[in-house]
Length: 157
Image 1 (cartoon, rainbow, N blue to C red):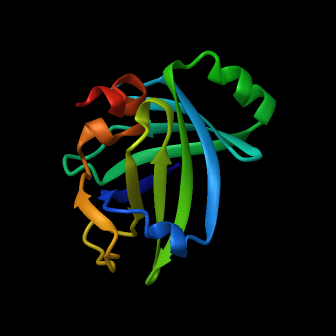
Image 2: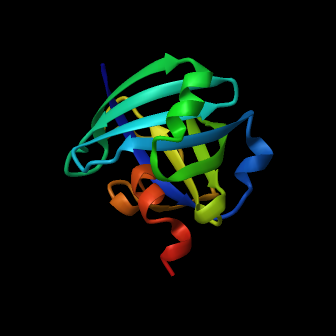
Image 3: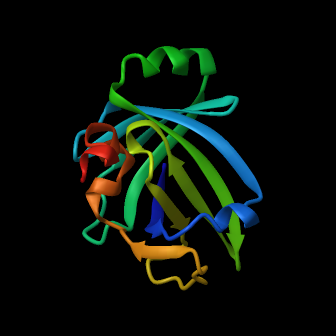
């Protein structure tokens, strides 16, 4: 068990791709997307995970997270049991100062959305903001992947 402390931002442009040191293809679905907890299945290239996340604090920066690696074949089967829609995205990793940003470029029904996350050691930890980083959306629930699976970006307009 652990506590996740992160902040989330929109991304202004794709300049982050020039400095990305790693990319992963992700598919994920939700067995449960209740507002008090989510149970997620994720396939990341050649690995698969089941993750349970708790409710966020009022600022949206801290929440409980438990994750365990599972068999990729079983994860593929469990994706068929998930609530609609399966999230399809590429995750780019970018080192910036002493931190690593995870930038998700979404496809399918969420195409056009690019979100950056940074994990921190404390809520008030400072970090360098790259020029491609846009508006902060930490705590805005419509940007949570569990909500994007129910209310995709293509339906926002």
